[in-house]
Length: 117
Image 1 (tube, rainbow, N blue to C red):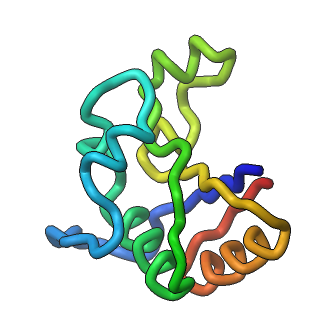
Image 2: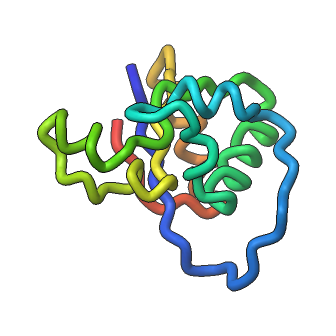
């Protein structure tokens, strides 16, 4: 089962260089499609929020998809303009419905505002 989390950027005006506790560049690149450097395109605010989800959950949050190039997205029949292509959509591997509910609850608290299961 995969859960999809999407964030919109409304609240922050200044982006500060952040060091993430839970996500590595390698992990982000593996979860990105259509390029080898997806970590360079992931929105730092969205990633900071996802990092906070992982922190509050106290358990692993494994990404199955992060950044997608617009070309890759279109090659799969999508618009090429979705949140993954903007670096702020994440697919997360989950094992149970309880895991999904827990992640969605935490994600809502930290500021994510759209979810799909």
